[in-house]
Length: 143
Image (cartoon, rainbow, N blue to C red; front, side, top):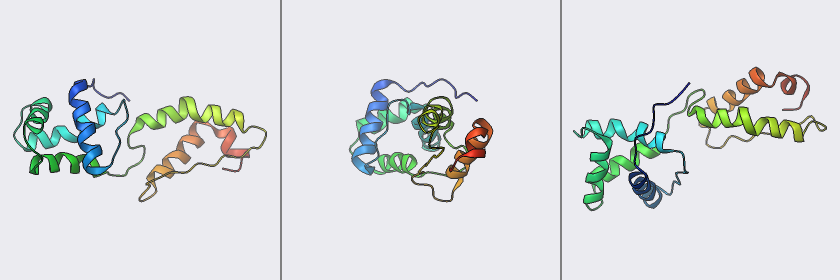
């Protein structure tokens, strides 16, 4: 499961990060360039731009207006699905859960909180991840 290489330039990403933070109070962390590309490329195409960088250049050259609103809305409208945004699940599988499992081995207890889980797919995705990759935790622990 690999994403295509990110083509968003650092200055363009910085601009979108600032726009989204200012207008929607959403902080885009480093490494979310792929998310910006995935959400804004369809908007750019619908608006008649040949490439995402052209769209962002237009945003940069104009005062805040309808085009900016469309960009911000695209970054704020989230969908929910199983294993949506797979990178966090990979980090959980490879780094976080092994470390937490080791730390809690004596307690045999694991508590996970899933924020902004509108219909539950995120929580179920975590449960699936645990069952498939950490069966010893699921079988004998209080999860």
